[in-house]
Length: 152
Ligand SMILES: [Zn+2]
Image (cartoon, rainbow, N blue to C red; front, side):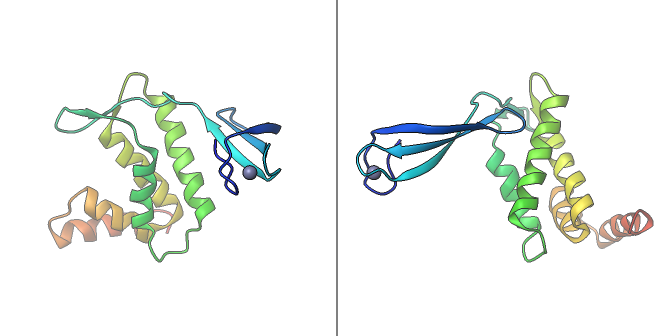
């Protein structure tokens, strides 16, 4: 770990804090060369199952990808960074609970849609229109009508 101020790699840990779900640890470090204090976050690797795509190939689970998809859907909507992070956490958590060996890519999209539906209906329609590949305007309208009949 490099000190952000002087680039020294010599540091000592002055405090450690585990997150609520015990999956990440924040460490407060002090640079042994310039005494600057900074924080590092450790998380568990290999937490993630492979993702099976619709064409049968698999790829590594990518949390950032989920975040990016949501980010695109909520662009210019009133969803803040914290909400975004919470949504991603919830999705990852649900997927982990439901799948043991691999995660079907459709399941990820379904979870994203589930979260978006709760948080921002417009963002949901944006995401769904890409994912579900609505080819006809009527299909999109049907989805919106479906949304309206719900908790809207
Ligand atoms: Zn330093």
